[in-house]
Length: 379
Ligand code: AMP
Ligand code: MG
Image (spheres, rainbow, N blue to C red):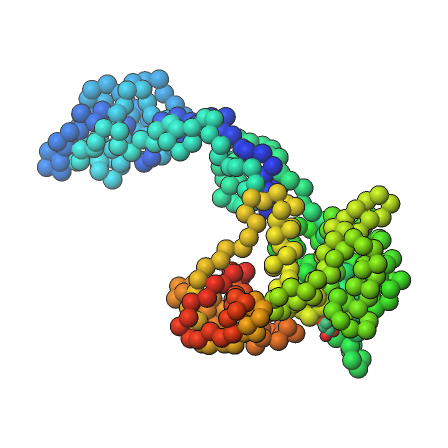
């Protein structure tokens, strides 16, 4: 269970087959199928019960014509037995058992190797390990597997208006939600993440915060301070380095973006500067940061699942940008409903969403009944 949520770094190969030996798939009697051919309720076959096999025990005693060995699910098949008769088709007796139904040759036997053959790759490198992979990793006896290290991500909110949750708000202040959103999103993506001490819109304070983050983090995320405002510290400070690009992307929300590298004492770390509006931050995270984290994790599946869904209502879109609206996908119906309006500050709407609804650039409106692409990002 220690490997849960990590990406496997090398193929896991089965040293033995699964099942490892022929065994019974039912509680019943190991028999020669020929001995019970033609058995019916009116004319049952009767066999001498010459042994009793529980799971975990095996026998060298062969089943000879006219005999049976009582056997439990998972017990190794006795030599020469060709089928198992489930107990429900018998009188369940010891001594002499009466069998009311025939069985085919090979019935109710789980054959060695019918699941996994020795030498098979049971889980491929790059797989993000879940409970389903852990079962087979344990079953083939692998006490240890090699996984990739998780990237450690530092999340830095900037903004003189921000305060922590639990602090009384003064005029003009808002609670910093982005750092919590982003730490949670990094963790959900499989990374470890910490909130770095938030900084005011002050160049020196921001420079110092980046310096300190670059010493310990594998990736730095900032929020805020990258648009066209007078106090956009992140952009002001990092632009002068020449290693971080600030660009506009034709998407809504999340138009202003920056990414590049920062260095401190020979350590160079990637940095992605996200816009300050919480919904912009989230949409940018999904588009740019999550794929980066999945790549750093060594995961072979980088992207969220996407699908087409039918709009339950119409909506407008800017036309010159690709819109990532928040939506509520009904998976059974295959329908999607926009939630929370389209403002990039609408965190209430974000909380209701389980998908991003993608309206391509060049499209300025969609109608109820139209089919749109959605990226699934929640339950
Ligand atoms: P900025 O790009 O810094 O001008 O921020 C754009 C908008 O997002 C402003 O309304 C900010 O108050 C808001 N904002 C910035 N950072 C955060 C944050 N960490 N949590 C919540 N809102 C924020
Ligand atoms: Mg700001």
